[in-house]
Image (tube, rainbow, N blue to C red; front, side):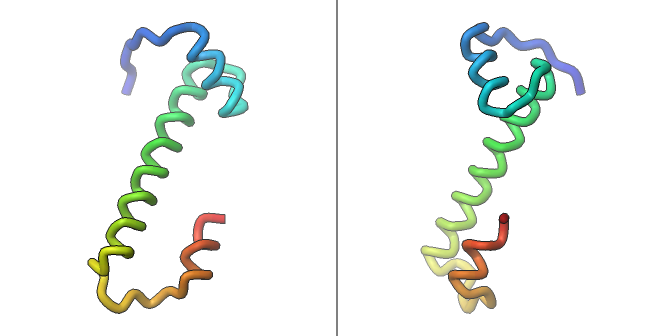
Length: 68
């Protein structure tokens, strides 16, 4: 899906630097994907800490190494 957005040039340069992308579009996609991934991980962690999953079958070490 294509969209048009206004992004400050200095912010876009930072996004490109941190994502390692040399083109603007892929840099924005990568940054947005990483943001969503982190939010989902944060939400999952919150649910685990609140005991929402009951007896979760993974150990703490398994959870920490899952996305590596």
